Image (cartoon, rainbow, N blue to C red):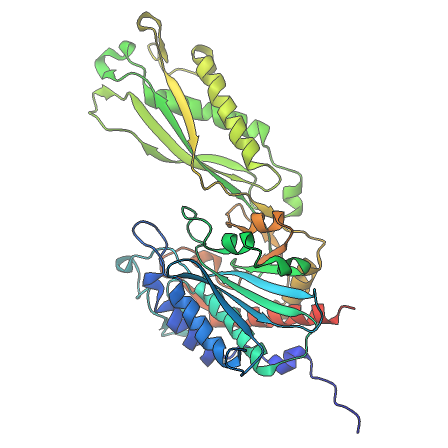
Length: 447
């Protein structure tokens, strides 16, 4: 009797089963109040989510003997676990991985929401809509990839490629390091992922995100001389000096880091930008010219420029302005000045940078991972429109620099990212499930 050919993977695995997905997501969103990441006010306990994932996969794991999944929790801080899940393939060195599904969330204020952010709820008029903090970013993806791995464990298809999922801690805050994917990479626990495409599942809108921006938080402090506003000729107005300095610094920044020719290829919505977002000063009366103030903001940098080079250039700008205060900056009115020679007093500028500088990433558009993602997206979603944004994703540039073929995608909604009344659509997540199965199938068909 002739042997029966194995069913295509997509037929064997099927689609995303709503009841199982919603049941798991409900458990995850139910933990989200304790997953908020904004220390010291909120310190997440990702182990709560990690345990739900482990519990869901245990019946088809090697631990119970009920399936082939190899499930491992890895913790670098108490209560803050990562989870690595492997469906073993038959050919050494062949691997496809889904990484970046993080188990922490940004804070939510229940008083500002139209529904409870910390429980999964449904729109009464739209059953496709699943509501709660983390549905889009990123607990919806945690549940989605967990369901994929569970289904592989149940069906047990014969695959040449190992399929590996990595659920991570600590994506939403960079003040603490070494306890999420950075710790896993440092310990070599993800080294085997370098031999195949790595899909970072934490973007949105069902299309390949092929580029992200770097981010440089900066603070520009101006020190002048506080004095009575009726005697402006005896003051150095720190606010005027800082505003004029920022104008000059921005002018130099845009001259040195103009729109890059590759930004069109990667379809970036904006070029690199430097802008103020916050103003602070020690306080005082309306009749006092302030002696010091600080303007803060950020730079969003397309990945074709170096963040370290930009930081050095900004330091050079400020040093040059300090040396040439009399001529480098415009003044405002006949007695506005930044130097008081009679008092041997000069205003001064200082620029500092926060430690959480992030580099942007430009995905490899020639890699097999990118081609598989595009083909799968066109097949399942109906069209493929790769895009880039100067929003920043932590960690993925570091992975790329370590030798990983990083591609990014996501199936939440960009308009609800970090927003009040966050939600996702089950239909989008279901398409994501099918995209993942298509990617695996394409890689299996390669010689």
